Structure formats: structure tokens, C-alpha cells
Length: 463
Image 1: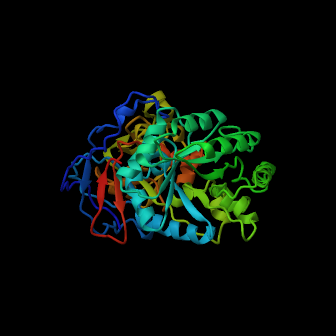
Image 2 (image 1 turned 45 degrees about the vertical axis):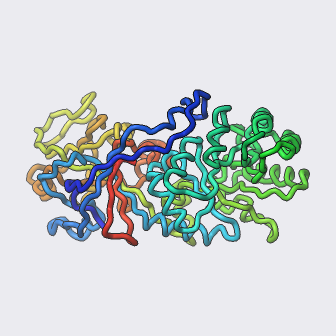
Image 3 (image 1 turned 90 degrees about the vertical axis):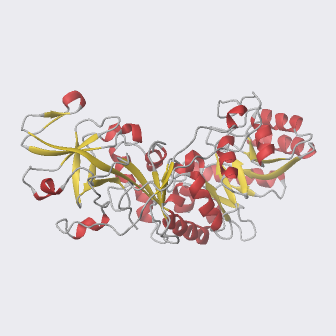
């Protein structure tokens, strides 16, 4: 289903956050708790949806392109992201089948990797997900406000002010050090705190040393109001098949579990471990499966690397996110004319240029300048000159060419999406990973949510 216009604004409304506790203690967000009081208003638009307009001159390849829209579009939507919720549903079902008998812990930190946690998490819950993971307490609060009732684990190390938030909103806490274990035990009286002990087996980022775990468990078990929900670690190299460190980490973790002799539930595997069969799930004993597999990027239809996405033929993931931008200006330049900051590109012939209303301020990386292509009018065309904060320029070819004659102000181009260029392409051009491409999508970019199960309701707004 395509969106043919974002010009019809049926309703504009505000959303207020549920009040947190008005205290000035620090939290892991680096903000006082009182900032959980009602925040700035956010705009949302309910917009029309109809079948796409396919330009007959564009040929069959235009089927994967964004729709051509009215030149009279005045809505201000010069750039928008489309999130396919039906793709997310598909991915969840494929992942659930893959990880059984373990459950999925859906990682929805960083606004669900740029997809919009408040819209995505309820869909995941509808599909049977009962456990979620976030990086910071405020992200967990936002999930509760969105109606999430399952377990929510905060993966980051807690600061003192986080404990009362986790108590108030029923968020599970990561015990990341002996100091955190002591702080939780000292603060637990009168509270109900659920904790997961994080073990550092080789990531060297966060967690208890294996030798500290037994003492932390003993102290927390004696603390009133504390329930130990699980034990976990994180693999540093699981997305690299055959890497020795993954085996080392897995072996260290299993040795710790044997030494403890406790029947604690556990979770270790991330998306990379799942796709490479290098984690605990692939090596488990039949009676000793992990409680959860933590997965984030795969929920959204991507793998940690393009190579992994191609290697796993048994599970086809569907990318859920596409970024589109509209043509805001067209012009013809003479040979010898330079374009954009730094004059890094100069036309070698008369050239028709389209300026798109998207730039690095929207999350389209400046690093892809001179490397990227966009899909416009059914064709892949190069981005030329330096990408600006709010705009980028595309070479449409000779002024008398068929594409140059077709493209007008208001037409839409795909910067990345399932039909290509893909998020993997953008990541390669920017010398980064697809995670960063999705997460860097700016909050000022409206998200359009499309769901094949509810085709008559499509909402666009700032996530």
C-alpha cells in the first residue's frame, strides 16, 4: 500500500506523557526525573491513502518507486519515512519459529531503531511478544505509556535515580556491577525491584566479572523486595561466523552457570548469534534452553551485515523502513557549473538537477555525498555535490532526456527502502552499519505507518 499524498491533514492532536515522579535525582538519561512530566507536544497527521500513481513512461521498474504526487502538495512533508507494520509482523513470526523453545525479547531501544517504539511495540505485543528491552528508563516509561504490559528490561547501567523509576513503572533492572548490586539491596526496602545480572564474559563494556556474581546473587537474594529474574551476557563478535571470541564467551558463561549451581533463567544470544548459529541456542542441551533470544535489528527486517542477510536462506526477513523525499526544485545547469558546498562536483555537460527536501538534518548521511544513488521516476540516479542539512541534489541526466522531462516539483524519490537503494547500500556508502542508518533518522521526519491488516487507517506523525 502506498501513500499518494500527505497533503490531507484530517486531524492534529497532542500527546502528553504520563507524569513521572517529580524528583531531582539523576538518571541514566542524564536528566532529572522531573523531566518525565508532560513533554513537548508532538504532531500527528491522519492522511489519505490510495493506490499509487504509476507513471506509464517509467516502465515496469517503477513498481518499487515512491508514488508520484500532486505538484500542489503544500503540507510541508518534503521528507517522510514509511514503516510497514505488516513486514514487522512477518519478521516476528519468522523469528519466533526460529528461536523456539526460547522466547523473543524484542529490543526496541533508540525509538525502535528509528521505526517509532510507541507504534511498533504494541504490534509486537499483539504478535505474542512478552518481553522487551530498552537502553534507558525513559524508553521503558514510554513503552508503558503506549500500553505495553509485558516485561521491560533496561539494558543500561542504572544510576541512583533510576531505581525509583523502575519501581514505579515495573521495569527490570540490569545489575551491571557489584556497586549496583549493593545499591539495589540497600534501596529495596519498600520497593519491588526485578533484576537481571549482567556478566562480562569478554565484551569489556558492562557487567559483573564472573568472580563477582556469586556474592551479588547472595546479597540480592537476602534483600527484601528484590527478585532475581535472570542472568545474561552479550556476545561481541557473534555476527562474524567462526570468531573465536564468541566460543570463549559462551564457554565462560556456561562455566559460571555450572559453578553457581542455581536454576536461574538466562539469555545470551543476540541477532548475530541467532543468524550465525554461534550462540547458546544452537549449542543448548535439550533441557536447558535460554529463556529469551534478544533481537532488535532482525525485527525490522535487517541483519547486522548484508552478507548475513544473504546467507540465511531459511528465514527471509522483510525490511520495514523506507525513506522518501520530494522534489522541491528543478533546474538545468550548464557544463562547468559546480553544485553545493565546497564545489565538489561540477557538471561535465548540460544537466537537469532535482533538489530533494532531505539532508543530514533528517538522518541522510553527509558521508554518502558523491557515492549515493536514489530511486526517482523508476530509475537509480546519482546524488551530486555535498549533501546539505535539509537538501540534496540529484542528477536527472541531459535536460532533453525522458527522465528529466518527466520529473516535477512534488514528485517523490526513495533514498532507501526495500526496493533499493537499501539500508545496506546507504551503510556501505557511509562506511557504517545499517543500525546507524535507521537509528539516525531524525525525529523531525514524519513516519507513515502502513499495515496490510488495517489498510484504511494510515497515520503520519513525529514518532
